[in-house]
Amino acid sequence: MADNYIEKQYEQYESRKAAWEKIHKRTSAKNTTLQGVQTSSPNEKPSHYNGKRVFVTGGAKGIGCAIVKAFCREDYRVAFCDVDEVAGMQTAEETGAMFYQVDISDGVALEQCMNHLLDEWKDIDIIVNNAGISKFSTITQTTIEEFDQILNVNLRPVFITSRVLAIRRRLRGMINRYGRIINISSTRSFMSEPGSEAYAASKGGINSITHALAISLADFHITVNSIAPGWIQTEGYDLISSEDHAQHPSHRVGKPEDIARICLFLCHEENDFINGENITVDGGMTKKMIYRE
Image 1 (cartoon, helix red, strand yellow):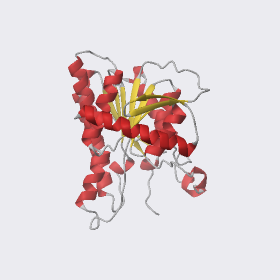
Image 2 (cartoon, rainbow, N blue to C red):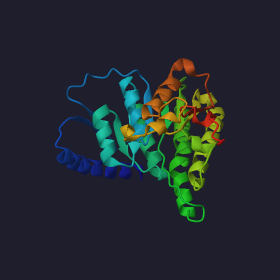
Image 3 (tube, rainbow, N blue to C red):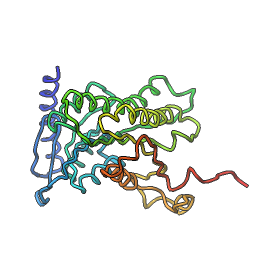
Image 4 (tube, rainbow, N blue to C red):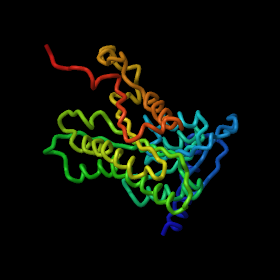
């Protein structure tokens, strides 16, 4: 089944690539590997890579895109997946990273994507589980299907990617003494507004599975941490009001690059003593008293 899936994905990719190139009227050197496309600018200097291999979920836009760009700038070898084909191709074109179009709520597709990448790379050093969706509605209006969908996108893939990596490392019987898994949580995992049950549950689950994985994957030399962003503005930053900036103790709303820098920090080899932790990055908002006088 996997072989047929890959062949089908390759055919679909070739068709999508031709259409995308026609729409954007761009030409560039492309190295194609079945489900993924790695692109590079004709004027780009050849990357020497630092030897570390990174896989990011939801890397086409927003925080995920900033993470992909940050690792690429530091000469990591980067692959990412996303359900958004157009944005994914654009990010791949800009960064030289390898893009896989995958709906991560489909567990089989996510496993196949990772296994294909592992066949190519032999191992993955860093996984950033970033992909997530949110939908806020009153508890009486939220359906069970909607609740399940948010958990299937936000929480379950953390288990799937971690499990696939652990299985592959055990099967290979080789000890890679370096590994990082970073899970993107949210400050909404420990503070809430009405109508956020599904999102809060998914992000709270990420915090919990993070420390569980840190213990389970210790023998594989993989540290596991989560990051809880606060208000991170992914677009229209210049439109934010001065009042919104001022309410933060850091005097500004966050940017995707703030989260990307923490990811890079956690991946430094000397930072292996940070393990099983959730790091809040919110400009100090969760430490601020909000009671009115």
